[in-house]
Length: 235
Image 1 (tube, rainbow, N blue to C red):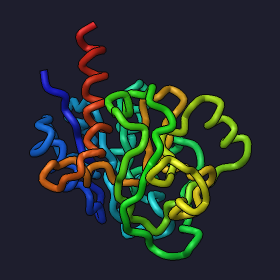
Image 2: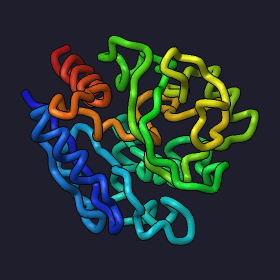
Image 3: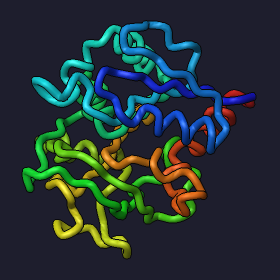
């Protein structure tokens, strides 16, 4: 049995085909595109909200896309326990939709950041990280509004419930301001909800899946999810 992924396409999405290519052509999963005006999730097991600049990032990043017709069913799918991954702009949309806590604001440098960075996997006991062998991975970022911010109570909850999945770090795993590309609180690069079925992350795992590029750290986000879903179906 194949796991089916679906990639939502918003006006301004520019990483939708990257996600599709990695999932379909490289990893061999069944993948569908979902247009933002549609409501049918096409029986997908996993929904991907891709990176880009949905609706041109007008008003505020992700704030308009959150009201796209398809988001009503994405939210319902997530609230029922369905697996959702928001990458970069997709992470911003998840926050705007209230599916994850906190906000993403402009980078502290006030500059767009585009480069490869190291991430420390803070929680390997999630459906998104169980397939990783190493605790430190290298994944690219490309964003102008990736500065994760939340109040003290929210940050304490994220720590208490092990919701912080990825943190920016050095190649040796050191976590400090020096390796924080955007000013995010606690060097946060990715989080999950308390239930553990929704992941939001600023780095782009879909861009480092293909062995041809000699970079495959990102693929394990998707293989982890697929294996966990298959295990549940086999029970």
